[in-house]
Structure formats: structure tokens, C-alpha cells
Image 1 (cartoon, rainbow, N blue to C red):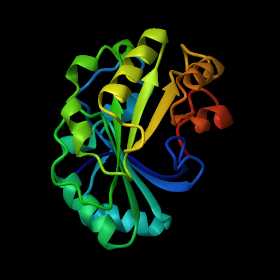
Image 2 (cartoon, rainbow, N blue to C red; image 1 turned 30 degrees about the horizontal axis):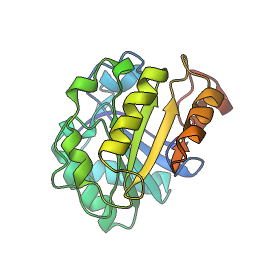
Image 3 (spheres, one colour; image 1 turned 90 degrees about the vertical axis):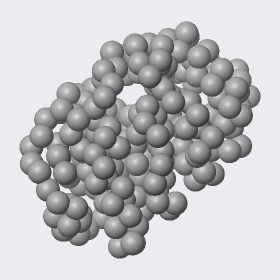
Image 4 (cartoon, rainbow, N blue to C red; image 1 turned 180 degrees about the vertical axis):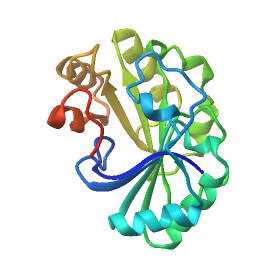
Length: 211
């Protein structure tokens, strides 16, 4: 598998934010979001087998593992990796951009589907039908850059009746939207939407990754 990086971290986002976590970042992405903060997504630092990745996870020795990218589902071996992570007792998270079919993902894996808003320039690439395949333990994330993005995301949430079915996360785009403004907009909806902050950036600085 083409690997960008594997490291122990503090999980920066989602409902697992703040928990120690092993980050497995697979190289390669099929989207080019305007606000992407992961330039290393295309960098292949090493190529490892599934067993070699699992050995790295055992050495890092944390019960929570996040498979991210880039887009992990571009590499077909990611399904085998997730299956073996579950078999070995890890809590496995998959962060996916929602543009590829969600087929064959082991049931205990937590899918975190990142639905792209207009500000990303990639909202036309989404497979919104994937939302109907999510389970109660899965999460849907929207990165919000402005009020237009917010209104778009809210339309998706309401149109697909997401609240009450999955966890819904709205994250302010770090360079363009104040978290307090997004918090005010969320409060106006009276819906159970979680304000999703990238806490690693608040702790270690704007250019920090989870670590």
C-alpha cells in the first residue's frame, strides 16, 4: 500500500477528538479541494504490506486507529486492512471524501464521510446516495467556509434526514470562517449538529497536523 505517513497522534476531529490515535495516511486523492490542508496526501514515503502496517500499529500501541488520506478507498487493500484492524481488536475509523462507493467496509468500522460544500469546488463530485448506506455509529462531516456552504450543508442534512440517524459535524474552514459565527448559525437551527473544531490546530498552531 502507498503510505504517506503513520504516526501516533491526538485525534483532532470528529466525536473522537482528543483521544490518542494511530493515524494511517494513505497517499493519493481523487479530489482537489480549494481549502485542502493536507499537502502530504500525494507524497508516497513508503510502500508497505497490510501486515507491515499492522505491525506498525502494534508498535505504536494505541486502541484507536484512523485510516485517512487523501482518499483511502482508492487503494483496494484498504478493505483488507480495515477488516484485520477490527479482527485484532482496534476501534477503526475511516475518513472518506464520499466520492466513491461505500461497498465492502466491515460493519464495526466507523465511517466518517466528508461531504464537500460549494466552497471546496468539489461538491459536484459527491455520491450523496452513500448517505443512505451509513449506520447509526457513522458520522457525516461538512467543512464550512461561508454562509453559502452552511446553507448547502443544512439542505443536505434536512433533505437526507441525517440528524437522529448519524452524528452530524459542521467544521469551520480554519482560514475563512470564525468558529463562533458557525456556532451561532448551528444554534439557530435547533438541530443536534456538533461544532467540529480541528483541535490540533488550536493546540499546536494553524499548520499543525494531529500528533
